[in-house]
Image 1 (cartoon, helix red, strand yellow):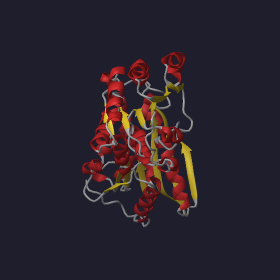
Image 2 (cartoon, one colour):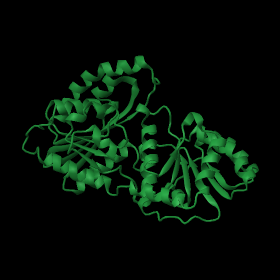
Image 3 (cartoon, helix red, strand yellow):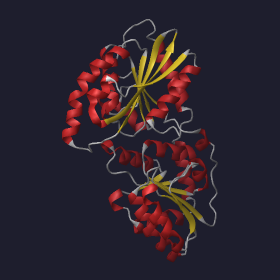
Image 4 (cartoon, helix red, strand yellow):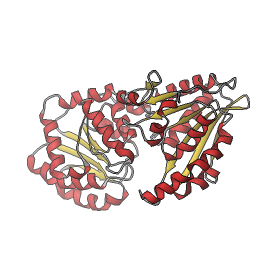
Length: 372
């Protein structure tokens, strides 16, 4: 499932190869000077390069961050203090590129800053409604900004943004609208790791659904940590459905659902849009720059979801929100249609086209004349 920066970077590199780049390289830089400079907060850093005619033309810089020290100010400041050294090191392998692609994040800072310093154009993909720190820092100097929300374009210079969306598996786009039946099919998912708040609220809501007489079928994906407790309790709920630690075929689960209860990360909301699924969104409160709240607000404004803060979500709130949505004739269908209007098919292919276009302008070695 191409949700993480690493997989999206790999997909783009593969697409660049299909567009005529003779060789695609994917090399781990875990032992690079950047890792040494960034310290323990970066667990992995990967760069993917597309090479044509023996020349590196595009670098896809992406990263996976693990906050091993937590969100401690001292640790963050120490890492930021090392960024100048890492940026200098990155200049060596960025200099010959035709373009650098970035999905943001602190670990993307050094290659992006190095590219701008040596005149290599930068293309950023910003999947969230509000740009993260790195993309905000370089927003005036990017060659192109690929965004998922119309409102995000306002953060970047006029004429350089395009709504491409985030790459999402085709199976989500292929999901047909689901007619509402007598039984409301509810999918509760906290992602592969699960979500403690959703697990607690889900369990608390079961007796409320049972007493209400509402016909529901609940599929609750708990993650490994919450599975044992909820799976033992669910048979006594008197409700139809199942509790599972992990869902291998998420498109199939989406297709069966009338309503999805979930977090609001960029990948999740992109999949909801592609599938045309109405949702109750509960943003993860500790997401960087509170981007999940911004995403949920944007989806709610579009009429595709209802949002509830993590701190206020419990069984009563979940039951009430589901009941209110289900009680209004045609609301689920209208929310689903609104979600599908936000979808953008072919995001990876469009990103590859833009990368080739930007890199092509620099084949003669001319520096990028981005605004400072």
